[in-house]
Length: 122
Image (tube, rainbow, N blue to C red; front, side, top):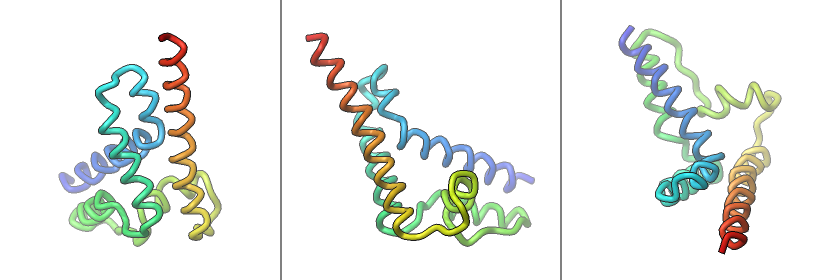
């Protein structure tokens, strides 16, 4: 039971990281000190998508699930939890490039908006 709770907690943390990597620029609008952390998170998210190396959080979650007696899964976090909701079954390299591009474009738009706001005020 403890392993299952730890795996579920890690799943929530992982989802939080994905959301932070995608939308963390909005938090930077309120707390400027978060900028370096968000840039690192965004860079890591893009790297994981493009390098096909996998995120260590996925491996840790799978290990905890196996120790809890649950079945693990072979694909990555995004493919297992998020893509079935957002995309059909056929995950291909072009789709992963699109996901990396979405992270970059969303954040470029957010940072562009923050820069425009900053310039407009001064």
